[in-house]
Length: 141
Image 1 (tube, helix red, strand yellow):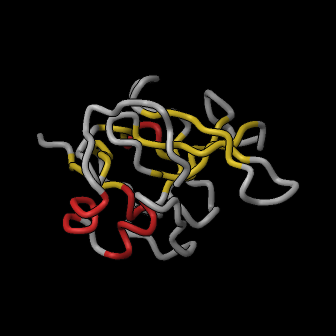
Image 2 (cartoon, helix red, strand yellow):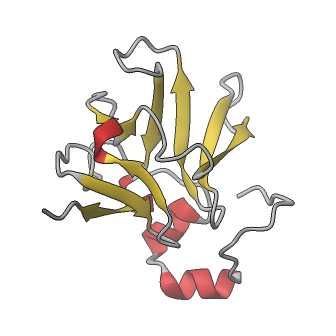
Protein backbone atom coordinates (compact mmCIF):
# COMPACT_ATOMS: atom_id res chain seq x y z
CA UNK A 1 0.00 0.00 0.00
CA UNK A 2 1.21 3.48 -0.80
CA UNK A 3 1.99 5.33 2.40
CA UNK A 4 0.09 8.54 2.93
CA UNK A 5 1.15 11.53 4.96
CA UNK A 6 -2.21 11.48 6.68
CA UNK A 7 -2.61 10.72 10.36
CA UNK A 8 -5.37 8.21 11.04
CA UNK A 9 -7.51 7.96 14.17
CA UNK A 10 -6.60 4.26 14.32
CA UNK A 11 -2.87 3.71 13.90
CA UNK A 12 -1.10 0.39 14.47
CA UNK A 13 2.26 -1.08 13.60
CA UNK A 14 2.56 -3.60 10.79
CA UNK A 15 3.16 -6.30 13.42
CA UNK A 16 -0.08 -5.37 15.21
CA UNK A 17 -2.08 -5.48 11.97
CA UNK A 18 -0.58 -8.89 11.11
CA UNK A 19 -1.47 -10.23 14.56
CA UNK A 20 -5.09 -9.00 14.37
CA UNK A 21 -5.93 -9.88 10.75
CA UNK A 22 -5.91 -13.22 8.95
CA UNK A 23 -3.33 -13.48 6.14
CA UNK A 24 -6.14 -13.01 3.59
CA UNK A 25 -7.55 -9.95 5.40
CA UNK A 26 -4.06 -8.48 5.74
CA UNK A 27 -3.35 -8.95 2.01
CA UNK A 28 -6.45 -6.96 1.05
CA UNK A 29 -6.72 -4.40 3.85
CA UNK A 30 -3.06 -3.55 4.40
CA UNK A 31 -1.45 -4.50 1.05
CA UNK A 32 -4.24 -3.30 -1.29
CA UNK A 33 -4.97 -6.76 -2.63
CA UNK A 34 -8.23 -7.89 -4.22
CA UNK A 35 -10.24 -10.98 -3.38
CA UNK A 36 -11.35 -13.15 -6.28
CA UNK A 37 -14.70 -12.20 -7.84
CA UNK A 38 -17.91 -13.99 -6.83
CA UNK A 39 -16.39 -15.58 -3.68
CA UNK A 40 -16.91 -12.86 -1.06
CA UNK A 41 -19.47 -13.43 1.66
CA UNK A 42 -21.30 -10.15 0.95
CA UNK A 43 -21.42 -10.22 -2.86
CA UNK A 44 -25.09 -11.25 -2.97
CA UNK A 45 -26.15 -10.47 0.61
CA UNK A 46 -29.50 -8.73 1.04
CA UNK A 47 -29.30 -8.46 4.86
CA UNK A 48 -30.14 -4.99 6.16
CA UNK A 49 -27.47 -3.35 8.25
CA UNK A 50 -24.23 -1.41 8.28
CA UNK A 51 -20.96 -2.49 6.69
CA UNK A 52 -17.95 -1.62 8.84
CA UNK A 53 -14.20 -1.75 8.23
CA UNK A 54 -12.96 -5.18 9.24
CA UNK A 55 -9.68 -3.69 10.45
CA UNK A 56 -10.94 -0.92 12.75
CA UNK A 57 -14.74 -1.18 12.95
CA UNK A 58 -15.51 2.23 11.42
CA UNK A 59 -18.93 2.34 9.74
CA UNK A 60 -18.58 2.70 5.97
CA UNK A 61 -21.72 1.75 4.00
CA UNK A 62 -25.36 0.82 4.64
CA UNK A 63 -27.39 -1.90 3.00
CA UNK A 64 -29.68 0.86 1.69
CA UNK A 65 -27.01 1.93 -0.81
CA UNK A 66 -26.00 -1.63 -1.82
CA UNK A 67 -27.08 -2.71 -5.30
CA UNK A 68 -26.70 -5.65 -7.68
CA UNK A 69 -23.97 -4.75 -10.14
CA UNK A 70 -23.20 -8.37 -11.11
CA UNK A 71 -19.49 -7.52 -11.10
CA UNK A 72 -18.46 -10.15 -8.55
CA UNK A 73 -17.97 -7.88 -5.54
CA UNK A 74 -20.36 -6.04 -3.23
CA UNK A 75 -21.32 -2.71 -4.79
CA UNK A 76 -22.64 0.45 -3.19
CA UNK A 77 -23.60 3.76 -4.77
CA UNK A 78 -22.54 5.93 -1.83
CA UNK A 79 -20.55 5.68 1.41
CA UNK A 80 -22.33 6.12 4.74
CA UNK A 81 -20.91 9.62 5.12
CA UNK A 82 -18.65 11.56 2.81
CA UNK A 83 -15.80 11.48 5.29
CA UNK A 84 -16.00 7.75 6.13
CA UNK A 85 -13.76 6.88 3.18
CA UNK A 86 -10.84 8.52 1.43
CA UNK A 87 -9.86 8.42 -2.21
CA UNK A 88 -6.41 7.89 -3.73
CA UNK A 89 -5.29 7.79 -7.32
CA UNK A 90 -4.39 4.23 -8.30
CA UNK A 91 -2.21 3.81 -11.39
CA UNK A 92 -1.20 0.21 -10.66
CA UNK A 93 -2.86 -1.02 -13.89
CA UNK A 94 -1.02 0.54 -16.85
CA UNK A 95 -3.38 2.52 -19.08
CA UNK A 96 -6.29 2.08 -16.68
CA UNK A 97 -6.21 4.64 -13.89
CA UNK A 98 -8.59 3.95 -11.03
CA UNK A 99 -9.64 5.56 -7.77
CA UNK A 100 -8.79 3.52 -4.68
CA UNK A 101 -11.14 3.69 -1.69
CA UNK A 102 -9.67 3.44 1.80
CA UNK A 103 -11.13 3.59 5.29
CA UNK A 104 -10.74 7.15 6.53
CA UNK A 105 -10.26 5.93 10.12
CA UNK A 106 -7.36 3.52 9.62
CA UNK A 107 -6.25 3.81 5.99
CA UNK A 108 -7.10 0.21 5.10
CA UNK A 109 -7.78 -0.63 1.45
CA UNK A 110 -11.44 -1.39 0.75
CA UNK A 111 -11.71 -1.45 -3.04
CA UNK A 112 -12.24 1.05 -5.87
CA UNK A 113 -14.91 3.47 -7.02
CA UNK A 114 -15.99 3.81 -10.66
CA UNK A 115 -18.16 6.50 -12.26
CA UNK A 116 -20.25 6.78 -15.38
CA UNK A 117 -20.91 3.09 -15.93
CA UNK A 118 -24.63 3.65 -16.46
CA UNK A 119 -26.03 1.90 -13.39
CA UNK A 120 -29.46 3.15 -12.41
CA UNK A 121 -28.37 4.59 -9.06
CA UNK A 122 -28.68 8.10 -7.62
CA UNK A 123 -24.94 8.81 -7.92
CA UNK A 124 -23.91 6.87 -11.06
CA UNK A 125 -21.02 5.57 -8.95
CA UNK A 126 -20.08 1.98 -8.11
CA UNK A 127 -18.10 1.50 -4.94
CA UNK A 128 -16.71 -1.95 -5.71
CA UNK A 129 -15.64 -3.27 -2.31
CA UNK A 130 -13.91 -6.43 -1.12
CA UNK A 131 -16.17 -8.47 1.19
CA UNK A 132 -13.14 -9.48 3.24
CA UNK A 133 -12.47 -5.79 3.98
CA UNK A 134 -15.81 -5.35 5.75
CA UNK A 135 -17.99 -6.80 8.50
CA UNK A 136 -21.78 -6.62 8.22
CA UNK A 137 -23.57 -5.52 11.36
CA UNK A 138 -27.19 -6.62 10.82
CA UNK A 139 -29.93 -4.15 11.72
CA UNK A 140 -31.83 -4.97 14.88
CA UNK A 141 -35.59 -4.67 15.10
